[in-house]
Length: 147
Ligand SMILES: [Zn+2]
Image (cartoon, rainbow, N blue to C red):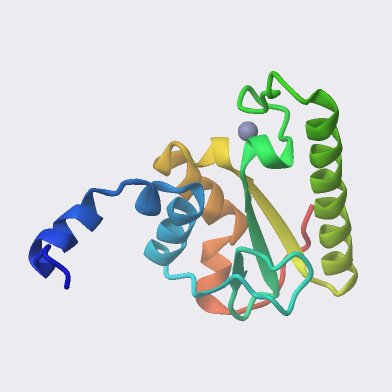
């Protein structure tokens, strides 16, 4: 039998931080607050993108800088087993490129948001607004030429 009451348990759960502060959650929160509707972890698409933006043929990967080798200060190297890590990282980067290419070939717009760029919610929100050109989104779904 569970000796912790559900009230106490929910307080304990609420104290577990990483769930709500993960880079992916930050991105999802901003999308939601801007009224952009999303599906999560679409297994039917190459690389199971973290976020699929409904009706925009757009996917978003929220990449951890360490695992996906962003090249920023968070892209550190483990101190041991250099060869193992080197292979592992190479595979990750290769897989990412492959997934992005197959998505683009299927006419998906692919957006990569790096973990380090989610730290400041204001900057993140500005970027997402720009990415989705919200003034256009409100009126119609015509795609503007993308860079
Ligand atoms: Zn980074």
